Amino acid sequence: MCRPPRVHSPRGAVILLVATGMAMGVVLGACGGDHDDTGAGEAVDGTGGAVSGEVVVFAAASLTDAFTAIGDVFVADHPGAHVTFNFAASSELATQIIEGAPVDVYASANVENMARLTAAGATAGEPTVFAVNSSAIVVEKANPQGITSVADLADPDLVVVTCAPQVPCGDYASRIFANAGVTVTPDSYEANVKAVVTKVALGEADAGIAYATDIAVAADDVDGVSIPADLDVVAEYPIATTAEAPNAAGGRAFVALVTSAVGEGILESFGFGSP
Amino acid sequence: MTGTAAAERGAAARHRRVGRERLPVPALVLAWLAVAFFALPFIGLLWRAPWGAVGTVIGRDSVRTALWLSIRTSLTATAVSIALGVPLAWMLARGEFAGRGAVRALCTLSMVLPPVVAGVALFASFGRRGLFGRYLDEWFGVRLPFTTAGVVMAQAFVSMPFLVLTVEAALRQLDRRVEDAARTLGGSRWYVFSRVTLPTIRPALVAGAVLAWARALGEFGATITFAGNFPGTTQTMPLATYLALETDPDEAIMIALLLIAVSFTVLVALRDRWLGGGRQAG
Image (cartoon, rainbow over all chains, first blue to last red; front, side, top):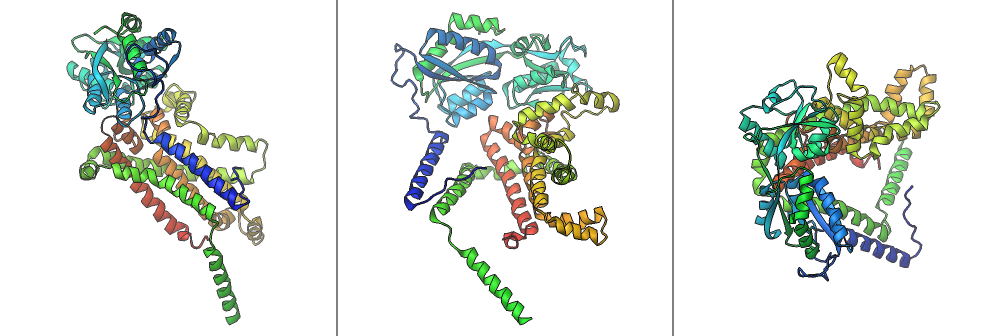
């Protein structure tokens, strides 16, 4: 199996030790969250300079498809650059950034998580709201349970899933239930909005609350039932570059693209509204 | 009499000398490097812990609910693993049948599977729309996703191989002649298994059960995928920790420390009680 290298001489032992120590040092350094020296493209600074290197973007799970498309445009505009995305629950990403993840751009599905970052001094400049999103009821294809309203979800026989209250889409769901004056007891609080849609797409849940955009992307597997505007809570998406961005110029260029007419057009094609 | 006692003392003294013999220095340094590698993350966690909030977090109903659920489900999963895993290990160690290697690989596949994939596999088979799950639902009205039974199933699915592999290895190393002797002396198959085989492999069985239990207690991916996340029914400690991390890292750290304290206590206690504190074995 995994046999350790055999040490024949004291000198061999020392070499082995030094090598192991260096390997450990590399591991510890890489995991230490110390990212001051990871400057991809650090030679480039100021707004006028060319954008190159890796641009790391942390974005809400609901932005997965729209931002991937924007990323393609970004790389076409800046041939020397490439974009690395991390899509997850906005709250999870905010925690990772506060803990020192080396990130250039953060886009959240609500203003609260961006406010957490700003309060922690982790953003550079004022965040900009670049899109809005609405929620909808996600149901199985062809809506076999005949769900037409938020009130229908109170039926205890239905398997209903929402995001966890700690996640923006879960917060929106509970506010929608409150607006509709119904008590809905979900069967599961999912970790992010994609998990909600997946549970319904697999047929394991009858219905859930998700963003209209996520339902649109999964239109082959699920259907959506819209929520009346007076019950819905509009989700605002702010974006900002981070205070300790390893590639600040790249981050600013990415934010500029997202907030440009081109970015807005792409976002609209995925169902997002303009702020 | 006295001669034998003296010989035994001599043997014991020799044994002690051997036990006290120094390890080569490079190996010793590497060993302590390994200890540091395991200890530092816990020290970091203790350093980050908001000790002022201990009382409020541990006193919280949601935390106690998750802890109690974790203890119940992980112990049930361990019981299931023992009940099914020991016969499976016995069959793999002693059975002579075609495709035994394939069966062993199949039964330990869930160890190397990313847990989330294990969860999806459970959906595909035992979900409400799964290959078998649909009949469970149709014929018996049994639904496993989003239930506590689903949590136990996910935990047993990923943790049982640890017990199976440990027990199978012990059965293979067992001196078959002892069992043969018991059989020759007229012991029934069951008598020999329960009175000769099982007591002999007890340390391996306990070690395997502890490994399986520890894996079940920490199970996250398969659980959140297959069983979902609901307080009191399916939200175990690892799930509660993960979601708390979204908004309140302090609370997450306290929950994690609580889980670590429980695991550590059980591991130490079990070692002293069942493995003779390491002295007998050494």
